[in-house]
Image (cartoon, rainbow, N blue to C red; front, side, top):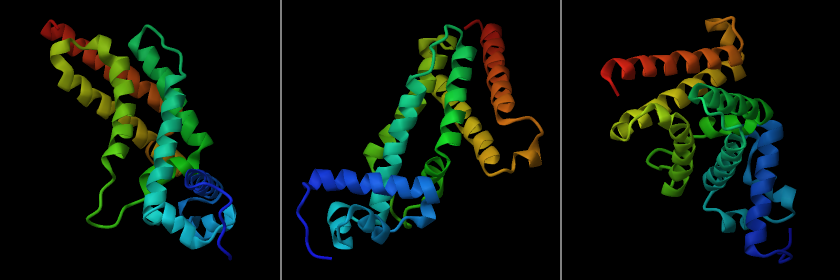
Length: 205
């Protein structure tokens, strides 16, 4: 394939990212290769490696885009005044996102960087931003002096919901429960928040 210069570097960066997303969305993360992406955008494999350090770097940027989309889905949910109801709305949006974007959602957790490498700080910030959305939702249940507990609770809820969705999306949910994914998520939220309220009432918070 001859050298082309039809697009700017920024345009090529976005084109490669979009192509990678489409491949993963349709076929899963294992189908993604630099050669496949280059074929989709009509440029050489060398162009891909001029845009991204390697395939892992491309996947990290693709996953970051998925996190951005998930954040927007959570921001769009109704902001009910009741904390439990607000969390249910967020859980419904999260579950809906995983079902609609299953292969892309799986890539967030299936992709592993080589030993000794870690995701960049800017990627971690995107993950933390999602947790902060949950922290904001549950904030009315915590005093300002219990910021650490609030943060831990946000991580517990996020991790628990992720576990439920993972089992459901890999069709293993029937191994541990007969309830559907939404019923389990709702029970998680109601039970956890009731426990928080009971404990805080007993402690006079």
